[in-house]
Amino acid sequence: MTQIEVVEPRTVPLGTGDAMQVERAIPQRALSLVGAWCFLDHFGQDVGDGQANASMRVAPHPHTGLQTVTWLFSGEIEHRDGLGTQAVVLPGEVNLMTAGWGITHTEYSVGPEPLHGVQLWIALPDSHRFVDPRFEHFAPEPVRMDDHEVAVFVGRFGDAESPVEVHSPLVGAEIRFTNETPLVVDVDESWEFGLLADSGAARIEGVEVPRGRLGYAPPGRSTLTLSADAEPGRVVTAILIGGKPLDADIVMWWNFVGRSHDEIVRWRANWQLAIGAETGGDNAGNFPLTPRTDDEPAYPAPPMPAVRLRPRHRRN
Image 1 (cartoon, rainbow, N blue to C red):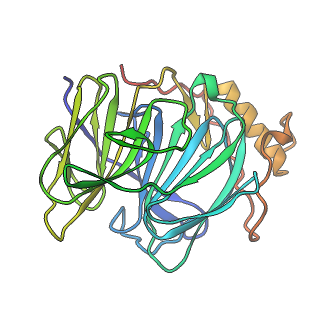
Image 2: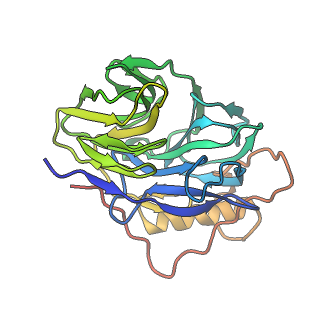
């Protein structure tokens, strides 16, 4: 089996105003996808520069060709979208938004608790890239596995399963390690996995993953062994993602996941047309706008790069 890799995240600003700092674990030059998971931001308490009380203020913006997943450890985020959805996600609940052919949304933190959690994107496969947009909300019941608590918010892991609809073989779960006993689960040998260590160091296949880092396990194993230096009174939390490698090379730019440079150019032009920023584009209806909740303007798309966008390749 190929050696486990530990990926160092990069710190990036997110949102408007005094933008909070997030740690972006994927995409990286060394790792573009884990299964169909193509984006993972980690934010909040003791993450990045420690902006535990930073506010998430993400004004109206578009998405295509992907699903967004929000999972919190603490705090609250209010979601609104172009479908008319208004939903507040709380710790232990998942918001899953399917962009399909095009959607817009806003995200603002609310309430007094510090914001701490992860946001992820799933690249849609060719067969479902242009499905109708939709929104789902689910609160999984944590289950006990080898004395640890596991909350599966996407897909299936062990005996736990989430009902939210995804279009690739995937798993996304929060694991709360309560002691040093390893968690061993049978898995599909064709799957790859990533373990994000949240509140302390964790281990994947015996390899230590420092807090805030992502451990990557390539395909080729029939069981997955996870652990952490937890003990009574000191729970260690981690996020597990995994799935069958996506059977496509994706072009990912700004908030779009496509298959070609030209596809991204068309979506950018349609978004700029929708918000009145530019006169190009041929389909303003590509992005039904989110009902406004304040006076913050929608995000205009950045200029296209001077070179053609190149696909991100999955691991072989």
